[in-house]
Length: 125
Image (cartoon, rainbow, N blue to C red):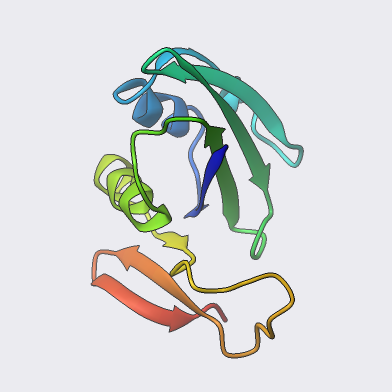
C-alpha cells in the first residue's frame, strides 16, 4: 500500500473532486461538505481502489491534508502529486520532501511549498 499526502491552503469546496476527476475513476467524495470534520471517499486508478481522506485544519487552520492510499496511484511522490494539485487549483500546496522519518525531530524540518513564487523548501512556520 502506497500513500501520498499534500496540504492545500484555503481549499475551496469541490476543488479536490474536480482535480482528482481528471486522474481517477469512479470518485465518491463529498468534499462539498468540507467543514471542520474529516471527509472520506474512494476512487479507482487502473482498476485498483484508492482511499481518499481530507482533514481540514491540518498544519494550521488554513490547510487541508489530502491523503491518497492505494496499490497504484497516478503520482510517484508527494511532490509530483503537489505539482498536479497546484496546476489544477492555483493555491499554495505543501508537502514533505520525503526524507523525514517517524521519531526524528521536526524543528528544522523543511517542506516543499508550491505557489505563484515557484517551488521552494521552507520551514513550515
